[in-house]
Image (cartoon, rainbow, N blue to C red; front, side, top):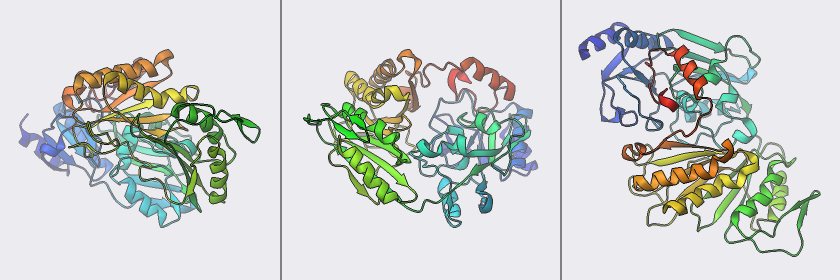
Length: 459
């Protein structure tokens, strides 16, 4: 169809539109037009034009994760929500906020802090918008204590493929009316509808924060006596990093001292591994000191600090192919097409495998890997050096899945990879709920107009 026809149709609906450029690609697929709606009604107008002319649409906010996920089969219109960034509606007395999809998480945090409140999420990708947060389902360290965006979401407005505006939930925490579209749409990569705004449950800003950090520089030395904390014996006769963490982490996460997050940073298998524990709220410093004593039995250099380590709440930096671990390789900037990033999830009983598996698979595939993530929530991210040969990335991913997915407990997802590399990979791995997901997609988007093929199984 002629570009003028679509442009005229969108402009007639009152929506700004421009021709797509090089920076508008979605996982390597370039759209034809970029629409810039400013409200749910204007998103609906865009989708009605798409329905009338059989066009496929992909939504974006900050554009920080457009290279994540499978490339769409087609992308005619990029629905850019950057203009949907009005000041949030903050009902401080109800501990609730409503924000448009184009509001960045940083801007939301600043607005809420003025009222002494926060959305208790640590988003690991700077520049993420509310819509992108929900569409990808990404979360940071404090998911252990407060949950993910899916758990804190209490209301959402979405636009469906035919231009219908649907709402779920409301502006109060106790609301059970209607279908829970928010939970369904969170993590769906825009394949079911376009999120226009969201309402979240808030928390008061904590009175104080403290971190306990400890580094395992070398194998733990065998001790003559077992370490005992509140009647619990911790194994300190281990001789490697994994066993050291296996000994102490359950005691930390189950402690009545109530840590908000327990994170790990392991830039390279041959180097040190750092553990950091966050304590928030009343008597944070005193509770942190008690956790420091608990961790000190197995991790001898544990110490309390008032500031987080520099890597806290961020995705792992990929090792340089021939440089020191933890340094950025050439061209490894945020959003760069050379990024190679995987997400690993596991169950508590297989905690050690969650972070040892990637390092073992890296040795087997002949690559270097950096691992960072939650020892409490069992979600880790793995970064490989940019420019790693596609065959080695494929070998690493296959080996990692062999380590992690035995028995169906673990999950490995390739979030980002260069196009040539991605063609050799199954990004999503085994998805047991795929038949149900297909039925949901058919119900919400039967013509496959929204982000087609961005999700498992070509959904």
